[in-house]
Image (cartoon, rainbow, N blue to C red; front, top):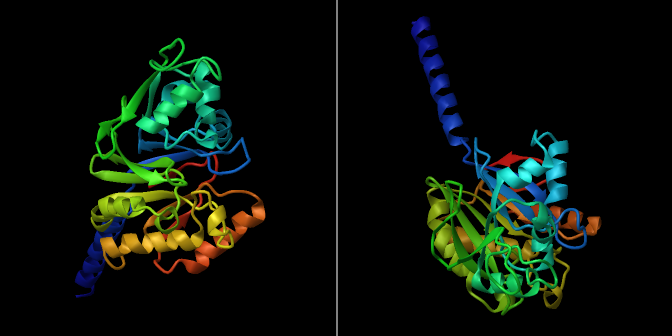
Amino acid sequence: MNFFRLLLLCFLLISFNAFSQKEQKTSFQVVPLGIKGGIDEKNLSAYLLAPVNTKDFICLDAGTINTGIEKAIENKTFKVSTSEVLKKYIKGYLISHAHLDHVSGLIINSPADSSKTVYATEKCMEMMENHYFNDQTWANFGDKGVGFPLKKYHFQTLNVNEETPLSNTTMTVKAFPLSHVNPFESTAFLIKNDDNYVLYLGDTGPDSVEKSDKLKTLWTAVAPLVQSKQLKGIFIEVSFPNEQPDKFLFGHLTPNYLIKELHILEDLAGKGSLNNFKIIITHLKPPAKNIAKIKQQLKSQNDLGFKIIYPEQGKRFEL
């Protein structure tokens, strides 16, 4: 009898372990090249995203590129040269909006880069063509726009709510508009690989302050993916602590507003749907005391039970 009980116990332990491993299986890898908002030009928004076990990265925004790659090499995240990561690993760029803290790395590194695609919505692409890659502020490394196009980059305009393949990867992207000091638009990117998804939001203000319904529309679109556990995580900004007055938010979120927005998402996806769900906090603005305050406020206000991830520049993690 004891032998059969032992056998049953072993079977249950093996089954539980297999189930746990299945539950913990990751789909994407992330290498942050830059994580902050604000004045730190060595560490501005840029996140490499690829399916696990591949080197086919797309760069989500491009505030800091070269320094971030160097940091990743220091951390042994990459074991090749900075040039090889830039030219071979990064297959393209998804630009949420054309503010310099999200595009300066793309501009500065363009002479050393290889040919690839830059994806953005129409308004964002027009700003980059007219104000940056215009043969005046910077050489036109694109294949359209003003001046003489050098055709290193293919500028591909994304249509909102339309799934678009990301060249030289197995991923696709769907763009959603965000309000970043209404009527200026930013973008959220829903990236898909197989049946798994990641959601990345560029800078955004809360609907209540922006007098907008763009976040509500986005939450409605992704709620079924949260419910089915196909959405592996959400990258979303929190730029200021709760003490920041609404009139000085400039199209950004505080811990209070993030929690309010995530409650709307949970209402749509079902009670408890965000428990242990991964929320990756981006665009924390210096000084350090403000960042510490934001982290404390998020921890104390997290009544939904989501898992908070604070990316570190150059340190790989999985979703």
